[in-house]
Length: 471
Image 1 (cartoon, rainbow, N blue to C red):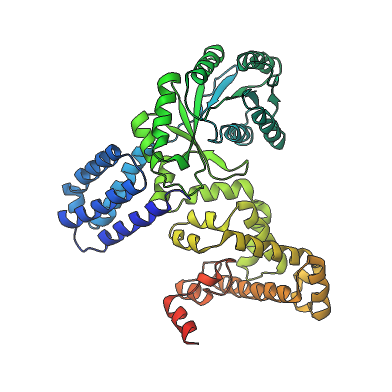
Image 2 (spheres, rainbow, N blue to C red):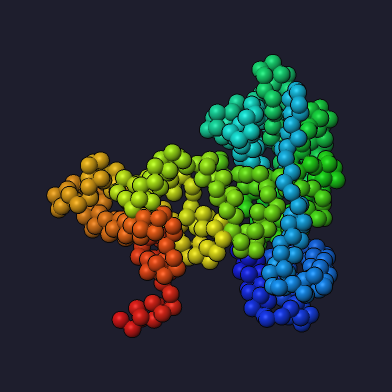
């Protein structure tokens, strides 16, 4: 994901500083030098970096910080505040009209994910904000864009208005507004045409549509993979159309992410939405403070909790959790856990949101972990309810039947049962402590036991690895 390298370097810089007994101008300058280099390598604009470092240094060398009980932590707090300020201080929401139709004009260069982002935003508005959106296909230059929008609209049960490629975009927009009024839609999103680069023809068409629909929001989609060019593209569109917000796409890619830290301070256009994956639900409102947490390796528990509330069956999870707290853990509970984790997305993605688990996330092979969970789920579903509640009955004949039914081998069934036994041991430990999480000693005892699929080859301490080598 974007910012991984930046996060690692920032974390190391702070670790070196907080390890010092006293804050001095020298170790402060050493830390700021490392932060400066990490920001520049992440492709943050030079002027932005220069101003950022100056502000941090001014605040960090103040009397309040120098005399603090833990000055190193105070500096981390200052850096966090300044990164949040760079990103926009607070989230900016769509300004919905109190009455009538709210219109959003989606603009951007071709290939930035504009059409997909339009559908994702419509889906978010419908599911989370109780809106009744209409998507309008105004990209008549690229016929595939209309088909793509229609397919996406069907998948989220949102209507797509189109007059086809033969009708000009301006006329499509005009008739779409009339159709929205007649059919009770309260929000209309116009997916406009893009180009490989900014030209006069594109801007003229967009300006005409803007004059006609008088949009409440003009959202520009920018690809996080383009780095510094995000700033140039955003500035050009903003100069000609007065863009009100940015939609960052492909933030889950391998970009360095620096453009995101530059664009707000240079263009003064806020980031409003971020795309975090390819699935239709993989888009969220942009929270500057949460993004700053992620950049500094502090995780993002609020987002993780929100995702859990949205995607998980909370009643099933609660029942399963209550049984676990009593020290009871059956194969039915294990099946529930696998199904709930699958709804949440990749294991690596979840680990990144948990404070202190960022490094472990990079050790998890998501493809391998997903394959392991799918195989385990297939095995569990091939069992009867009685077998899942009473795993002691699983002898050779039953295992053979389960293996055939799940398309796996008896060895796979045995591996899954061994994993279950280890998870059961941990749940009994938790039950014995009144439902509290095991302490560090207990966690170390469980380490490397296969509890996290896809992480096995990385698990274990340095001492454990040395022992394995001796063997």
